[in-house]
Length: 222
Image 1 (cartoon, helix red, strand yellow):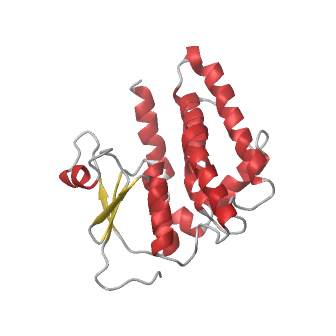
Image 2 (cartoon, one colour):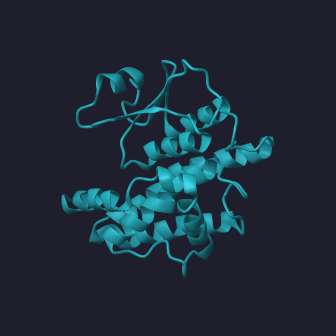
């Protein structure tokens, strides 16, 4: 359990199907930090969400002793700086910079490409799938033969890639696509299995059947 004083208050405002909210759940669990969770309805945003994240008005938001922090990657670094056990980032400045680069690349380039492929219509699907496969190839080349992106232990990039490790398999099944497979991307696929079967990660991921049903319902509304 992470060291904490008795009056410490940690609260997470999130949405359970969101991989961005889940990143924070995983980080807190890996650190052994106890927290209170508040599920948000983004169609009817709570006063707390509007109060704690007036700029973007979206989840996740971490509230630590009354101080709000927004944006999942910013929150992950805050958690790592605040609770120093089980570090997500190396002490080496270059390694830290690389981890930040790849985390940002996931959000700016890789996740959007895969998301677009899974939700694209017939007209744009071929190009979207091509871009998704290119994005996964970037990760395949980056992970090399490491167990995790962070080496032998889960680090910042692994947590940021939770969408790749868990959500993609569900979304590609719903969409009838084969993006991340052991044949196409053996290293990333192997990483995904190591990631989702890590005992702490496994405990922190949303139930697969519920996540599948949520996105299946979303797909049927298109």
